[in-house]
Image 1 (tube, rainbow, N blue to C red):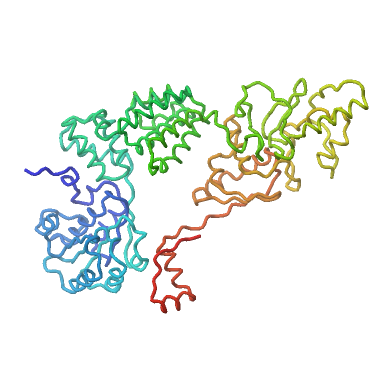
Image 2: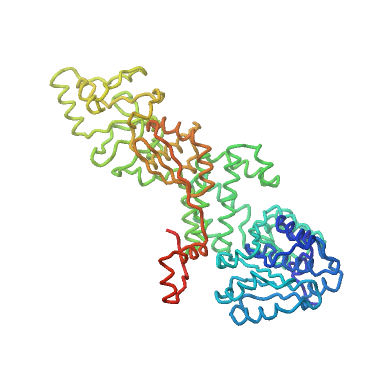
Length: 617
């Protein structure tokens, strides 16, 4: 007897059996029950989510002998013929092999005949985006004014290739990815109906690997059962599908916590040698970093929301405290950003090894804009600058010509050394020559050696109105010029928007400041949100450009936090303005809009030309 795959054996035969897509099922079921059927339907979505299956069920519901009704009976001759693919009034057409204008004309001639056995003639065109433009144009009039009792159902994975004139004549339903929980429940139901023994982590692993596709999940389950037999285990599943085991991830995170580059490189070689699916490995790595970050931040209260087994929960709870929260957050974002690049890289194993080494050395990596001699803010802490915590740095040797005034704050320590205290206020940077000249002037006027000036009180006098900080420094005594200028305390009263900022208008430096504030436990707008917006910053206005509507909504919620952080940063109170992103338009919409322009009409008609491609700048 021929073996049927699980996907074919358990293909749903009613709307209720279809996993997910509740909205689409409800609309089509009600249309069949009330006999209010549209002339054309467009079902779009990724592979394996039920487009063709729902199209067949809808055709059976329309032609069932007990129709109209919400579900087909699957018992009458009409339903059985459609299930077997032998019904004369239900035609399933492959758009890839019937894509010419001649095929469309033949189809249009067939439409003119009334149904022979059923109530409706149903044409299911699968992969309909493969039809040529001329074939689409040949169907336009038929779709707009079809004969009675004729229904078109287009199924496609690339709806952006459809002409807008076709889309406007159809009822369009978008099929969504199935969630991991929905796929897990569907697979467990299939395994229970098959009477097979299985491990919960193995089913969860297949559901995660399928990435929202029911057909992919059934194919992967078939593949795992081919080796495991009647017992589905997590180890066999990982071996068959080429997936990394839990012990490999534990070893990797231990090496990341210890910053052990040798072990990380060895694990990278093991991953490549075992033929592990690198794309899915990076997805799992991202998920584990998310788990560690949430456990590090929320502790055991987060466990019910992570869907972990008891052993997994104990393992990740033990690993989470070994990482700083900032390290996990940055590693999680780096991994998410690197997923597509690693999969598409000509050397994915080398790209993965570079990512893992970067994750291990992340606390030691120094941003290029903070290197000496570059026009950017100095590091926020001694540790980032490569110095052991607790040590003071001497006067900066960076000349005024090669570095803008940094955004960091400082205070005077014993011996005249300057210790960084945070980026909340400005600090003066002078050349060695200027410092030497100031010391010579001090010695000529006062033979007594210069003593370090104590830190000024909070109510210390500020420069006179209209006098810039350099001018104020010249008006002071030579003794005061000989030592680094003291910095106002962090809790200086807020200024109004008319006061000029005391820091360079550098958006990247402000994002780094917010990251430092958050890492030290102080309230701050989310740095990941700030980095997803482009900024235009002047002395009295800050205009932010979110990349998407979701980012704009989150930014509006954090408006007060951003303004408060700007004030603490030393930027005064600029006018904060969010510029909404432009709505996304498909290529078909852009082509149609461009074609309708008056200046294009004569050109297109004279040359008998068509617009094949159009992008929005």
